[in-house]
Length: 116
Length: 115
Image (cartoon, rainbow over all chains, first blue to last red; front, side, top):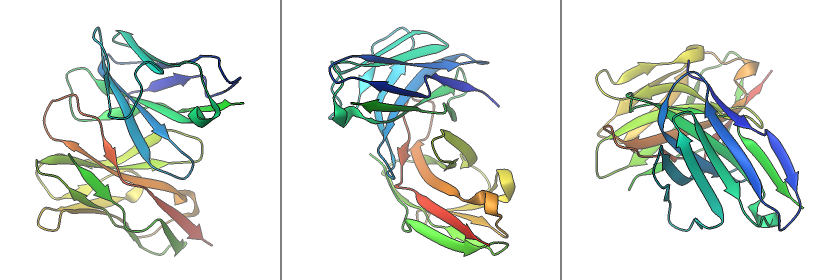
């Protein structure tokens, strides 16, 4: 099956700093990538949808200036958490949809962000 | 907009017993339905999906699910569970068609297999 890789798997950063998370589709081209956030023992909440070469579409309540998303190529999307605060600590998961196959998205392994 | 309800937050089952994880959805448009499994600190793995056609869908690891349009349900079943099935299970929906829509997830059901 298609493989989506996220990096890093976990990261600890100081409050006020920025953190970048990468999401790569390793063996397919993804026109659309999605970013989700998951709090402990809770469900995944869609944060934003990212289409290659265009601006991301953010869900209601998600601050676009805080969570910067870039989708510069068909295999890479990045999420940058700017001026991170402890309340941003969470599990962030990306998924990517195969180009031309608009039914199934494949998920990365997730990134555990801890802001201290 | 769509919503997903997973009625059971936790389901304990003895090993080799059958299990059913319930999922109901709400949507004003036609949807695709999915079941995912998540192991601790990992991403999601697709178990099975319903797009169209036969309402009984078979997936990996011996799981199957039945789409019931009149009851807006998509319950997941396995006839005999194994210790390795212990995980979090998520039901999800998205609007059908080729649009760039993300998934709406239920809150998840923690399946606990007891020896």
